Length: 435
Image (cartoon, rainbow, N blue to C red; front, side, top):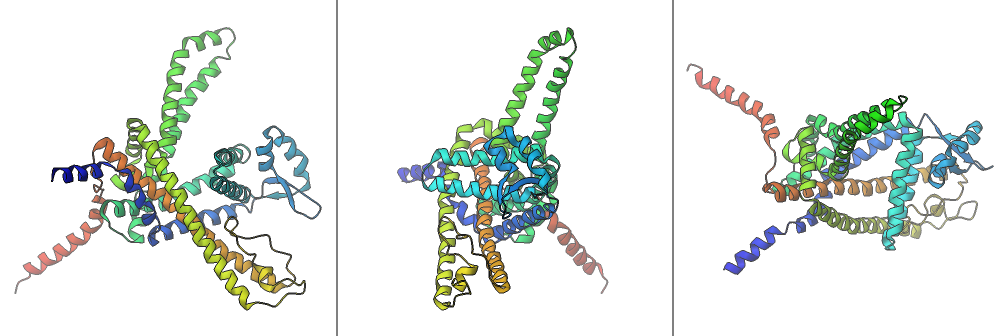
């Protein structure tokens, strides 16, 4: 009996197996719908902003893009300015979002290939190039980047916050609340979700400004060097604070949204909780994150394989029924839909269309394929927020010894309280009515 109790206690102390509930939670239809809507809104916003084309590209004689300024930046950042000056006069420009989207898709495809080939160097390089692309956008298209970043953060605050709330309720209590309930929670707490990632950046900016001002004083002839020497220790202390906040933000960012979703935290409480959990148990945080990343990679392979089979079987059975060829001798189905492969779900580039119907058919097929790709991306987004929500719960259990099923519910009570109060008043009025 004692051994059985000890075994049960040991199983309860092993928290990391609970991370394997992530996929089941992530593929819940409410989570996927919210993630899909968020992806569609971000994509539509980016394409709308791309009406203002600002990215310089070079094209060949047939109008095909040879190189963009982003590709030039990745290959040789010192030559970007000269590339822009040489290519801007030809009037060939594209949108920032389209450039980043295409580049990110290529890097993601490269990362997946490196993952399947167990090429760690290639995986890290593709991820690093993605962040270099973000730095390019900030440097050369700052206004565009700030506007799009604000839109993206706003959408993520609503969609990501709703997914975290759904994941928290499912993980903590096994509840499956509706879409509107989760979205209502995230919109009511929008200020906390939106400001939590921004507040540490503002703190870093203010601290950095102090060092910057000290640097300006250093320009004073003769006295500047002395002032810097006197306040050097002060500058190092500020640099230490910047480093602490930067590390806490980079590692603890994933816990900010779950803190609001789980505990109803405000902005600063979410930051405080995420920082304290990271610095209190850093190796446990790394361990949970690594387990989630490895499990997420396996789940992604499964989802991608499912999507490949879906597309492959559909294409094969369609091909059994279509044997007619177009005027170029190409099968009519092959003219509008290339055969998918596991590594390239969209298939090879299509041949040039011969009729308007082929152009329209190819467009509609690609639209359907984009729907499938959007669902795959929705699974990734839902998995990310669901995994971080579970990690937050496990870290809270280890650091604060808070029960896994302890979740903030006062918001729901506040919603139902007016209804209960109204009903109670109605009953009271009825009872006071003279017979």
